[in-house]
Image (cartoon, rainbow, N blue to C red; front, side):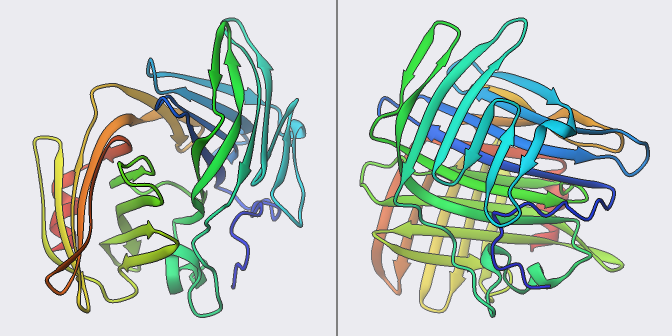
Length: 323
């Protein structure tokens, strides 16, 4: 199974359980962030199926989950062009138009200069050869590490200007989310042309489980990759007081990374046995600090206090399985 284009919809077979969601994060020049997630869910234990739209406002931690009939979910089979009610999503364009008892949301965002994680026959996107394994619990795709966004979104009376802002797009699909994970992402650093995406998750594998990791550092057009499948090695990993300290080596490259929770989180919905339920705390004011060395030469030394951070499940088990 070679998925050449991870951005496409993968649920047309109708197999259950199944979920799929596209994560669009948009940040303004004054560092206001909004996350929009369209998706679809089908339970494996009951007849429940639903399409949905999530809106997460980083300024106040408010998460709104709007269910849709699956008949309102229409995705092009040849490209990521998703019509969900009166909302539209693609890699190039997001159009929002929805209302409920407390929300009136309208706006349009355009993107330019996408930087996807490369996909080839030998490297199945950010998952590597694990992307060929059909029994994987959850598949992951990084559709753009960093890109320019323009446009605006109005939430009730709050008009947010995203002109000359930055964006990030990823997606997940499969049977379920991992039971434990740490994930962080930012493309707001003092130096331009830097983006970081890092994840560590419990992966069920046959009769046991392990902690798999995917880290990408995009710097001035070059993607530095540290992953389970490309033989990157843990030198040190620890978690204490809401902070992950992580040192990884690949060849002559050494990456030292620290991830901190923020102070304000929103509770995102995620697939469960019978429905989508609120269970993932995500911070949009977290911190990522990292230093990348080639032998003893420092290539990058940067920090961001405008990072998306998720720490879910049992971190002790996650860290122990990584050692």
